[in-house]
Amino acid sequence: MAAEDSRILSRAPAPDDAPFERALRPRSFDEYVGQHQAVGSLRVSVQAAQQRGECVDHVLLYGPPGLGKTTLAGIIANEMGTNLVTTSGPAIERGGDLVGLLSNLAEKDVFFIDEIHRLPRIVEELLYPAMEDFAVNFVMEKGMHARSIKHRLAPFTLVGATTRPGMLSAPLRERFGIFHHLDFYSDDELTQIVTRSATILEARIESAGAREISRRSRGTPRIVNRLLRRVRDYAQVKADGVISEAVARDALQREGVDARGLDKLDRRFLDAIIDIYGGGPVGIDAVAATINDDTETLSEIVEPYLLKIGFIAREPRGRRATREAYAHLGKQPPAAPVAGQGTLFDR
Image (cartoon, one colour):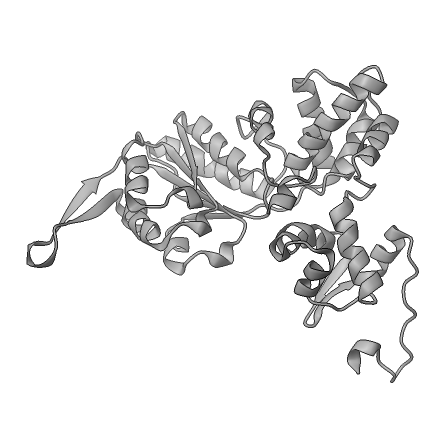
């Protein structure tokens, strides 16, 4: 995934993004933009838990990266007046690591596990009684002298985040009481986000400039904030610090981000399907080998957005470029096959 991490349109957080993202993250439901169904439901759950004096039920958030799963976990903790403890599935390698984290939680704390589908199985099994009974069972000694000891935990809320909910085991998935899918944001929602972020950063931005950045952000708040940083730098040097529509367009074109939010990797992907494979259908492994990139990056990062905007279609035999993709790239789509003749790929 190294190639993906280096892209300006990557939905994965880059190391230098961390302080920037923390400064711009909403701290309450009132500040949060978008995901109205999820936010409305979580607001009710938090208010009900506060009235009963209990912790919020365990929450599973799933969807593409960069859409606000970590932010929502932080908001739940803020609204409950408790602490947020964060980790990720790959970081918890042994059962002892998990027990140490759980034992240090205070009552009603929010425990956030990113990429929860990547938890090792032995760690996941320890999580079951922790979620159900707020306890962890230890087996001491072996053989005839083996005995089980129950270690009590403070009641807590587990918030799990995943981009691949299908990879969660059924026992783990069934222990969550609240499920929410986060989807891509609209241009209007991203315009609100980039305007708010520019205000926090004390950057001067015009409404048309905010819309231009939003249109190229692939429906993702993390990307819109990253593009804002690049445009702010360009405006500071080239345009007296004012982000207008023209300044935003020029800055993002220099970064290789076109009017629909496609970058060089997206265009290489589409060019391979169109120029090498006649528009498809073609398998993802063949495209990955053709452009010398990683299959997982293409299937998890590039494809979802191209599917969303209708530039590719996924068929049983592979991926196919649509007429919208041809038009965007300035290429002539193939003529429709004569009835009864089929196409080259049908023979």
